[in-house]
Image 1 (cartoon, rainbow, N blue to C red):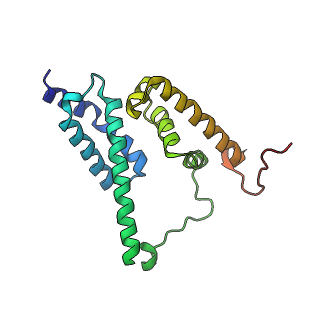
Image 2 (image 1 turned 180 degrees about the vertical axis):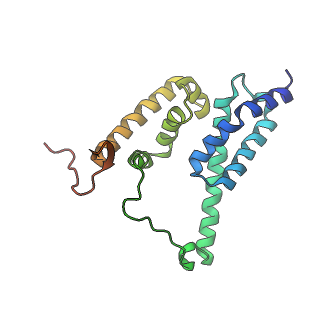
Image 3 (image 1 turned 45 degrees about the vertical axis):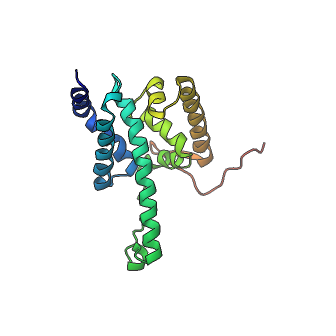
Length: 187
């Protein structure tokens, strides 16, 4: 199979998986998702001779880099808007959630958000993208042992964050208890 045919097959087979990967990390900003996915496959086209036999983890690695570039670009644009005074708060378009508007699983996302970006990524690759440790290693550009260690440490830190949140279960759903802070390291 030629490099062009290999790329075409990878595109057909993995376009939606890469789109979901990007969308989950951009929280539904659909126009941004399309832009990043297009960049991923542009890079894949330019490097089509480098496509491995199982290209999805490699594509996730490319997507990680494209997302990092996009996030840096969004930050630059946001800072520019702040400097010129064209932010949402200046125009009174602030959105405030009502009490009790949290979804039943939000505490997991809150605990995940407290982790470093590297820990978040290794956990997302295994949970959301359903990659094995060998595939995570390809996506992260590291060895299998390093990927396994990163995953182990990230899971341990996530458990610690969940413990810090003092999750209570009421009516079959779990939610963080905020009324009494939990003291750590005592006892």
